[in-house]
Length: 115
Length: 111
Picture: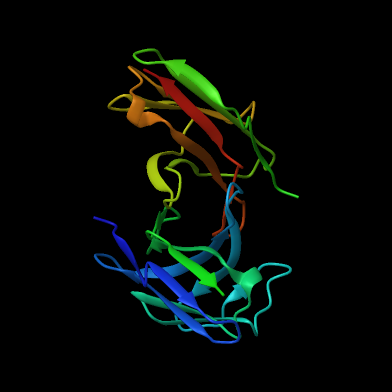
């Protein structure tokens, strides 16, 4: 149980394009989903907390207009990196918490490379 | 600023020995404590969670929590080369649903 999927697992795009990453909880309902970014050999960095049906809460220093988050249902959250640039190249990982718990289960991550 | 501190390592342990990973946290109001394992290039995988003072055992893993001293540890018995990874300690902040992660300890099991 508690499986989280992400799609795509790997994406390469040109500078200036937008990329959408999907995060799904497959066997449970998640009121809260989280988006993290991790650069090579660095620790996880929380970007934003997403609650179903409401606006995401972004961490300090994360541009909400650049990283658009939508949590449309209890099993799906999306992160759109708008006008991506090479410095946005990173490993993006989502996690989800089951209703009534604070345990986070992570998706497999999406590796974004912006040329 | 709520913090979770871990020794970055690498911690080298012979195969078959006990690996001991430690973590301290700053927020006395923290209620939930987690250990995640992260292999290079992969996302974190939940190993254990603990809520109460004392020990919690699951197979070869034992989590230990001491809220008075604000530390949590993970013991891995009969260490295997496949245990070589970065171990992340994570703690919930009081009053919100975020988890605060430590920077992780790199564990290397020597065959």
